[in-house]
Length: 420
Ligand code: AMP
Ligand code: GLY
Image (cartoon, rainbow, N blue to C red; front, side, top):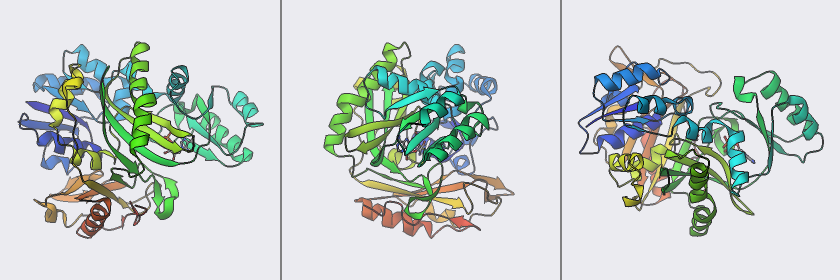
């Protein structure tokens, strides 16, 4: 069969690598892809938001299955467009992708269906938000309602910071219309865990857990980024946590969406915080995490095509989802200066040393081909993933492997998975 993957980051490279393992697949296309994806798929110069062009391409090339990697097209309704054209596509429809697309919607959903999450209020007026903040308990968290590249969350220690935050989000519109509505949320503390799942509208199957490192610098200092590294499984995701989440969070979320007339098909990514009062949902995403996909997918035993098809056909209950009994660590190699400003266009050397190196993966995020050479083309450049029998071993392998790759302004955190 012919598969089209939509997106261009490390996540889409990991998806393409899993798809490439399926004996059912003859040809993979990726729109728009990147230099690394281009080694296993044919990259097509169509942007992820160019829905009509994507649909036309899928029709003309008789694509059997399209997989949407990114949040923006999902929230924008790309799945509906494919379905209207009679094409098979993996991902939630627009009315279900709102689970990620609107934080105010997801908070209201959790409240209505008693799914554990932080206490909150939604505001669409800056004056009302400021009035509330005059007496609210600090620290407090402000969230832009809409998509903001994972950066629309402000943790405010003082009342002054919170007032300034309202101005930033709602008046200065730092994240555009995403800040028309904000969620003002109780501040929680605890370990964070990412749990990805496959969903077919009614059944949910949980993947192995992972943990992200969102801050740019060692010791969780510096600015929030898209993610500087990950490990899987998370040792903090214990059997007790799993049992609690199965009872109160996972199926409850899927049932809530179905009850609202918004059945969810695709990936639900649960961002959890393990608080003293038990696990709570920080956020939902409607797609694989990046870089979480880069440690979770390499450990998955199933043929990913079978799982995608079971989700689309409402037969996920027939799938026995299995993961290897090992660990994986991904260290992101970034361009120095990310996430603020950085240079691009430097040649990346050493990539060929990974050819045929079992248990190691170099997932490309911001790379492109320039005159036959692979050069840096983004803030996050590569994700270097290694497996090991234990997290410690995987971590040592991953850091050893980062030494094989060189490019000007190469930057990475040195403490991914260090606390393990
Ligand atoms: P989100 O995009 O909602 O996952 O938020 C981004 C990050 O902000 C999370 O990964 C947490 O580290 C932090 N965060 C979000 N909500 C809260 C909260 N209620 N309390 C403490 N930290 C939070
Ligand atoms: N790594 C977090 C995310 O994909 O949103």
